[in-house]
Image (tube, rainbow, N blue to C red; front, side):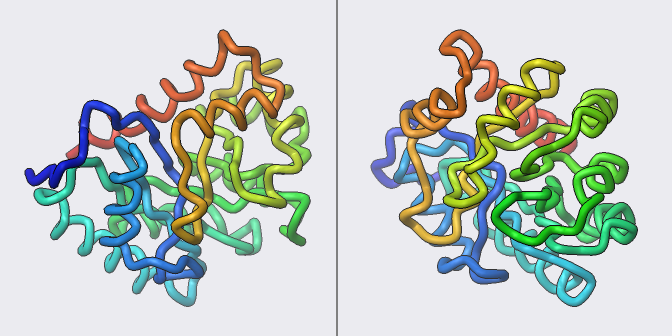
Length: 230
């Protein structure tokens, strides 16, 4: 493995929700991974937007790119997908299809208050067994309890607009014992963040200092679980 002057010991940030040119991101996977490595990432998932029109193209191509790069990069890269604005009734079957096509992590674009996401999307993501429910907006108590029961992880996001409900998500997830992670939902190089920036965002969401490390541990456990399957 070629570290190319990158100090691997400093790699701490884990980001399980990013985008490449295979949806609306600016970078090809190789550059996205390289920039994440230089920023101090230890793992990144590329989770481009998919629906029925492109899932069979996007997921296999991301998986192919990461497979080719795997032995030449100093961080863990994970192929994934973000199911986005799909009618709730179709979400569970699309989650299954994404996994069959090579997605090792499946994110569902939750009911953010920044976009007109269909009501019932959060519930369908949980029912369908997504790994992460991204920016779930003003998620209901019933859905929080269902997420806890199903072991679904909720996202605190660095993404402008989607982050407006971070406080609600953090407060309610902690109240009901639902695991949370912090992701960037990166679309451009400037969206990538350091672990220190992630810590500030978590504090801004109202998360107590003594709980912040547990958020990073949840991300770490997801990555470790994926690696054990390989």
